[in-house]
Length: 403
Ligand code: DP6
Image 1: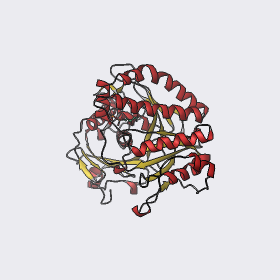
Image 2: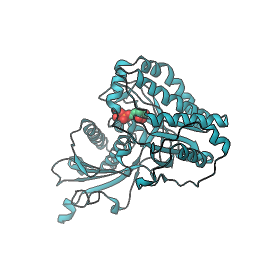
Image 3: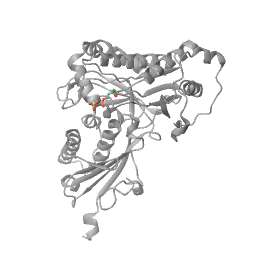
Image 4: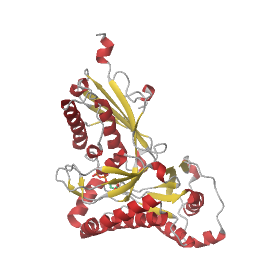
């Protein structure tokens, strides 16, 4: 065999999206397997604006598994990373033993090199672990030639990652089994279902790094009775209502449920002992702004939701985006000196806002509160990049200089 066919790594590059929950996951019943205490539902955001790209190379000359994240080599022995690697390899072995010819037998005994980057700044405080683990699992599966249900493996990297395995509107069914086999994500509707839906990520300037989700939800499970009530008596019905609102494209119901669910999640954080504060003054200003805007029109045109940090994610419809953005500019005057464009992503033509609307918004302007806005929409799930030029690892199996 010629030398280069022996040592050339098998390389695959894929991308995966971020998702933002409208019915939140908060609390585990099994920490190791990452099994939640309630089901959840999210919208997958478009990868044109927010995505993780991951290259996995497998080669018999590699001495050990290695990983580089956003330009820096990290510890491959991280338990959640090891869970994903182990589960994909186990699945590949099982498929091969069951006689599946698509499984790459050679690959199974090889070590892998993994290189992953986000197209958005980690400092933006956007949950990158969901896109990251979804991308890792999806790419590893392609390298080993396994397909089918993979969300249960992504879940073991980070709970919310299972929902990034699909595009559009996705539910994570909590499941009942002890082994977690029925705790998987499922697409409720594809991204094409609701083309008018728009998403604005208002990146708030955070003073400090908040408590991480994993530690935060653990303390909530241990100390918050509101969390128990939420999981048992609120979320089951809310999931049904939310799925129906999505099916019917009923924005008013979708918006109210989204805001109520975000508020209840943050109430459980306050009910946690010691309490956890993810919302800051900017977040609270956004909440007031949305309610004043909706009150002015007598209907829910805009909804907010917040994860484990102060950034607001706004859901609205195409016909309201321009006006709402103008109101945001009024309340959070952009800092033109920060050298960044205030609005990135899908472009929106500026519009005039009426005096009545201006008068309806009774909020003190808060300059520099929002550092920038990402304008996006629902998008598809993970995909393979076919062009070898897009690999993040070179033919030597090491990160390319700009990766
Ligand atoms: C507030 O999925 O980051 O974003 O499973 O411990 O990795 P781990 O937690 P993670 O939690 C996400 C929590 C949330 C709500 C959500 O996305 O549903």
